[in-house]
Length: 446
Image 1 (cartoon, rainbow, N blue to C red):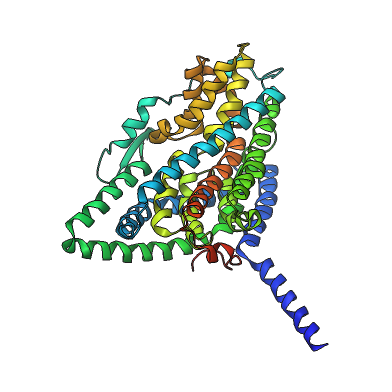
Image 2 (cartoon, helix red, strand yellow):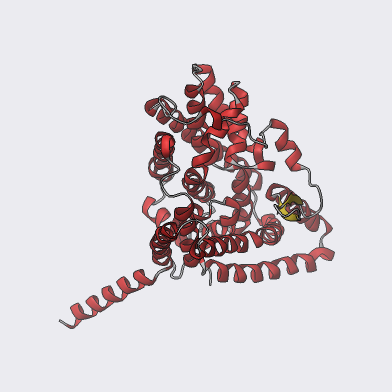
């Protein structure tokens, strides 16, 4: 009798903890955001609520992006020092790229099959006047240009004139450049030897501080989630779907197959628990969905890979930033495949087997070519130009860009955590006890 009462109390306590868990808080944020978005939409464009959720959501994404440069630099430099103890560093890099390509191949094939079955461009009522070429176009030279740093911090500043005539400067950074420079500095520190030990000690200490600040920001995720989803509902709603609803459905079916079929098959093939992976990766996937930014979510992805999935820090700090720039199964595989088929059908261009093979080639190899200017639109322009399809077709899809971008980014960030996990398992460096352990509450490091 007493034992059964104790078991009941333990179950009640466990259920209460689940309701208060970080993952549950994010779900609450989604629900609250949906309600706030509907209210803001009913109040009309420019209402105090619509402006408020937009400002809060943008501020949260900015906070996450703020930590990306110092996190990449300190984590990579520290990891290079730790890699002295790893004998298969080159093999890890090769396996990472190989599995990037394998999952990209499966994803783009899925996108092509879905596009051919649904035929999103057949009978689309979108106005041809909406067709226009984008200002930024992907090219194979962009990858090489993106590797060459413009300055030691990999920073750039874009100027934009406001409606009042004032110039606004927006700084940005190239993570691929930061990654390469950090690797170079780390290797140089090792070669220098003892005189560089204070630098390595400082990098390790600074990394610990960044992770603490990062945790404080991550704890705000439920608030950020509510604001971001509210803004999405208030801004776009369902009205913008219009004649492109068929295209949106095709995209989301393709994304669902990738995250719900292909990724579980990869996990199963490598002897990893499907349930355990998705339970622990949920904060990353949900944040990717609402923030629409792989870069913004990258610090959370790296923390989750290390603290929840058991990927060694020395490897995660290399694989996750690399994946955030070049591993995009949503933006660079499913989306360009379905979108290219849509544009071809809209303009009445028949695609043959060679064209489909080119789509596969661009998706598997071409995502690296847009690393300097990563984005689904840039990736689509690279695909269309390779196939000889009119770039003006990009303008036809801009109306639903924010809606499909949410799903694309969720798949992107999930895949960016999946590959380091798989490679760690295959190379025997995965901390299996960490992966098998129950999900920490609150999630990630405190």
